[in-house]
Image (tube, rainbow, N blue to C red; front, side, top):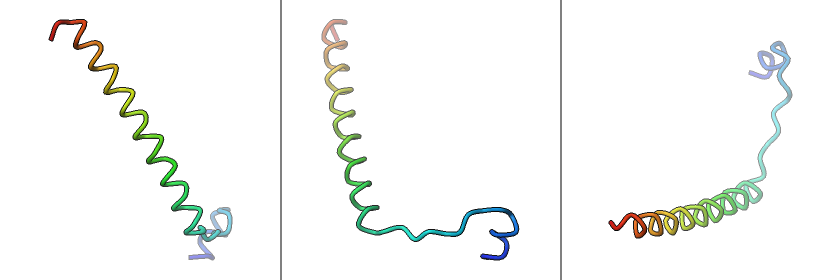
Length: 52
């Protein structure tokens, strides 16, 4: 596989540090949760204004 990657001008593989991958995923999860909370509040406000 390394030969094919090199032949295709791809960069060498770099192993992912599992700790940094976990930290990144946790940050993304927290950000997504916050965004969903904000969306939920906006939906409630718009629904209340519409009388529904």
